[in-house]
Length: 223
Image (cartoon, rainbow, N blue to C red; front, side, top):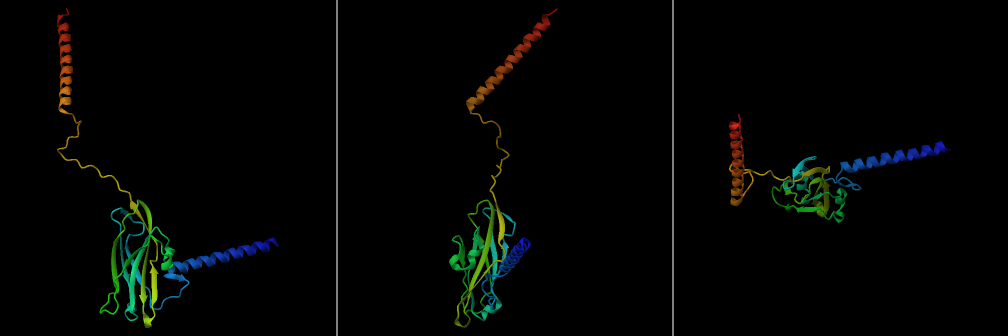
């Protein structure tokens, strides 16, 4: 009886582990909306991040988010429009599931992508400076959102970048002092101090010379 109960418990644990691992793998492989929404037939914007690179280290004043958003080519036929790009530093990736749950620290960058213009661009490049970061490790998530007005229906389409980007901000080190060739690196003395030091040196030298003179003279008088 105990063996049967133990086997049943192990079976439930094994099934639960497989189920959740498959659910997570599906979540990581699909755009936002997973795993509760079906694939959107008109496609999703593609996100390409050039920097920061995973595992990279950057100075505090030189951290840039450089990325490209590419709309599906068929969006020109279904009136697809890119709405905005958003990024989140040290936040919760899952907050992008819906606009109502966006983290308060999410930075939203509007995109000018008018409809009905000839030769509408499909590719949009961004270079955004990430300021105010403290020294240490950080993580970054990027999201692109658009709308498709196919047949008069307004469908919101969003996609989160495939992976969270982990990077490091280096602490600012104190710059080494630049020394000019003519700079005096010795002890700084005022003119009175210089006179006092010179006078003391002369006095000591005089005493040494006098002592040497009398000592030599006594040696000369000795038989």
